[in-house]
Length: 194
Image 1 (cartoon, rainbow, N blue to C red):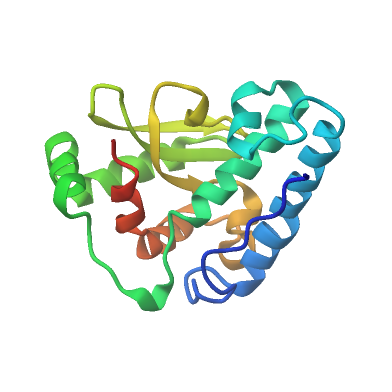
Image 2 (tube, rainbow, N blue to C red):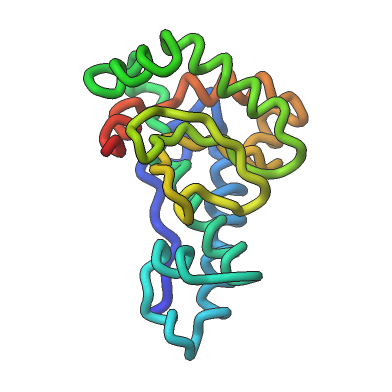
């Protein structure tokens, strides 16, 4: 059975005013849909044509990896965010303790994360990850690369692809990052801790 584009976990306008419905239409409805369609075309008739997306990412190489990993990264990104109206605060519980232990506080985490995102050249992702030893770290990946294929557990991601922010922020990555932090779902991040 071919993969289907997963539905957004909220309405297309739920992230406004930080990310517009137009941006979600382009990013999810157009780009992510095209990625899924290409994965389906590349896996048709192969041993991976019935595999879930995560398994395809872990086994694929070349063009199939690029499309599958980017589709997985995008789905992960949407589940890292929460609707603007949901409100929210910083990390609590075990996640809050880990942030304090490894960064000092959430403001320092944000500053370090943003610094990595602002240094990243071109398209890619910045991730908050949990290392195998339990400590938290920040990594940048270019293009479709993902921590899913390594030893780190991805906890939070921001897309640095142009279509993730251009309709709303043009080339102003600092403003996009400020908007991103207004939408982070700390509950989703906490649920990913090992």
